[in-house]
Length: 382
Image 1 (cartoon, rainbow, N blue to C red):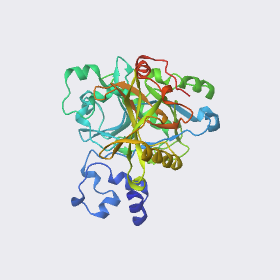
Image 2 (cartoon, rainbow, N blue to C red; image 1 turned 90 degrees about the horizontal axis):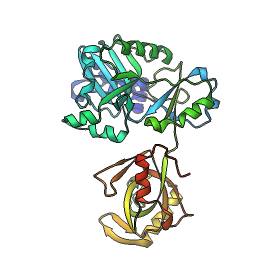
Image 3 (cartoon, rainbow, N blue to C red; image 1 turned 30 degrees about the vertical axis):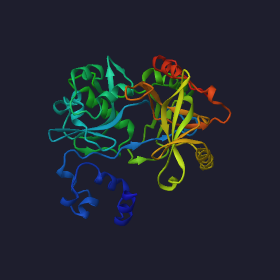
Image 4 (spheres, rainbow, N blue to C red; image 1 turned 135 degrees about the horizontal axis):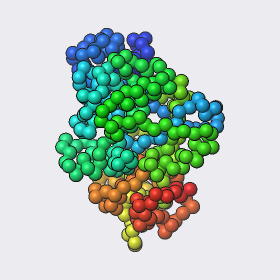
């Protein structure tokens, strides 16, 4: 909203405004005109570019036209980032605009080996013996001021490069993807340190049917699915329909029962919209996830009425409720966790649907969830 407002007021392109406000700068040190003109950025070598994002594929891939117009890559589940080398300095930015250079010493060799005036876009991953490890392993390395030898060994960092945004100090985002990819490969081939920073593998496919089959093996690679990018696409700011698509595999699902509820915020402040869910552990119920998205306004009102009538205990804003409402929870991954009572943590849990057709004795068990961790042939329950 801020970017669009400034763009409208200044009659500047919103993508240029977005680029100008990214990175490190102090508002008391520049004027408004310097901001909207992007004049301040030359004082900071770390200045990143806005990320190009994809929409979820909402049609059959066959409707995208001939396969020859598209590049397919795996959709990796790591930390999207930009690696910047300018004037002898190295910077690593996360998509959340955090400067994370110090967290990943394995990538510091790029300060000596990457040419000045280069900006790479890609995914920070834990890669061990050539294999991408799960996000839960990568988490061991995030937001740490010090990294011990064990963490370096268990979760070594690599970078799968998707794109090159700046080459020889020139912004090349307007060049077609096919050309940028050629430049990217050439840049990475020159690196003396091998097998740490690599071009994200391109998936070879002759037909959409073949790619659909390959997509089913995503989880075996710790991938979330497939990215589809038009070979003639530029590197947009933000999302633009039609050029880049993310074609994710179906999430895992688990049937749970709601045991706690809490009122939401904003326009939902008068309704119970934040829920805690549990699965069976023998004769007990153990919490497994919290979620607050996925229900319609009508369903929220129904759940709210149930909570008001069936609240058992109060803990500040939280209400314990009778364990009667069954919900299907979707999630992207599962990992062991010492911080959670169940010993497990779900990645990106959200409500898939309210299972009014099921009773509490039909929900999943903690043992069934534990089996997901060791299984490589995981399937959704729908």
